[in-house]
Length: 269
Image (cartoon, rainbow, N blue to C red):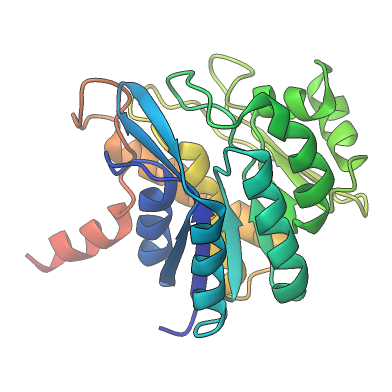
């Protein structure tokens, strides 16, 4: 395939989040998917049972072997779990990914509320990785953890930009009952809303992973940052709509990553 995307993220054996969601999203949007595994959460749609660290040496070797063979057109970073992993990834990308767009989803909590980033790693995330990102895609709880307190929505985005961030897509899923409006804001002053009505569905497992992976895919395909975010928002919205009546698992089920391809297939029957 022409467009190559790399996900540096954690695992989800139930298939709805993490590198599994990223692979599905990259593939659905016409990109070749590659992965570097950073952590092994043992989870399903109901929650995270436990989480195992991947040795830093193993992560380093994964990065080295990928970049020595297939240089990605864009990179998505998800769950990193510990401070040493954050520093390892940051140091590698500083050397090898200077001209590659990086989408950073600052994953801190699973949909179930289980922690996916150790508390003592937040400062390393702010100091070492945020400045490398082309865009960060936090939800409100993650944004509050990064800025150290609660502020209104626009002020929160402004505070995030002061952390030496180039651009932020602040997700509005935690704001109200009827809306899921996201705010795109750049250090250059470009600002606009990405509006959306809330979809009544329990199948929202991996929505943050899917959105950031979709932005990564559109950047690999040559879209501008703003257009990549718009297209990714539309893709995720449609993936949630397509899955709202599905029943996969006993908890928060996954979105339908291949809704667009399924329609093409059904039209041929």
